[in-house]
Figure: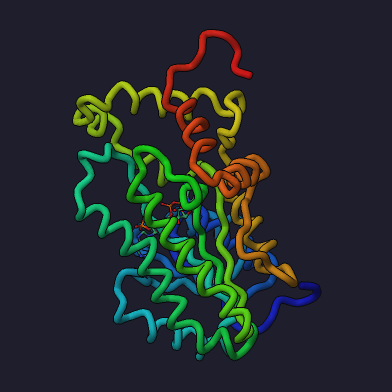
Length: 294
Ligand SMILES: NC(=O)c1ccc[n+]([C@@H]2O[C@H](COP(=O)([O-])OP(=O)(O)OC[C@H]3O[C@@H](n4cnc5c(N)ncnc54)[C@H](OP(=O)(O)O)[C@@H]3O)[C@@H](O)[C@H]2O)c1
């Protein structure tokens, strides 16, 4: 897409922190009319800091993406105020770590409410506006939506569900003039990771404690040395990839935000019997060999 960004607003959900906050500032810097939809203004310090440093102007609104009844009015009001709706970037998400045995179904439901039903409700409400102007919907998925990750089964399941729903709808959306995409980042250095209560999880892990420790020791210590273990990106790098996708003339359905994640996802997508992924993940779960890793 060349020249000025199209008319109409871009709603970015979950923009109080992390990737959402970075995307708001990146898009505003590129000239889009951005509506930063934050879960709570009280917890939007990350966004406030970025906005103050960059000097961009944005419209900040509160929205809980699990509050299904408020979403249609929210979307309609944004479109009315900004002369239409060009795009929705769905970044709101929750992630958690636990053993499969310990995570209860209430946690699965909370995760799916935010990560699946939230974006689905937003897209459904946004479509009449997006159809009117050749609009776009970009969901922030994850490498965990293509490869099931150990100790993040509910999170992976929610991102898989989102992939499946959007993959089904994307070709239909194309035919009514709307481009639907999902970005698939690997690990990102945001607060979402720092919020994990390791002491509590390990304390309750019982027979899984050893393998859980090994998995996360590997993730922390062996990035860049273990083949296929993607390096951590910053929220700003992922935001820049999202902005490039939004600005592209012919956006793909799937967009990885880093080359190493793309390679890993390519192997998964070609892994018809699950053997390759089983081997790769197995290497993350097992103790590091004493000598340099290949
Ligand atoms: N961090 C990673 O390693 C990683 C990797 C791949 C993909 N992702 C994806 O990237 C996206 C952004 O995550 P992040 O890493 O930037 O983490 P983050 O900083 O925690 O951002 C997530 C945002 O979602 C908001 N949120 C949570 N529940 C919400 C709700 N019900 N309604 C509205 N907003 C809600 C949070 O607000 P509150 O804190 O106020 O609740 C927070 O601002 C997520 O979809 C995540 O799954 C993250």
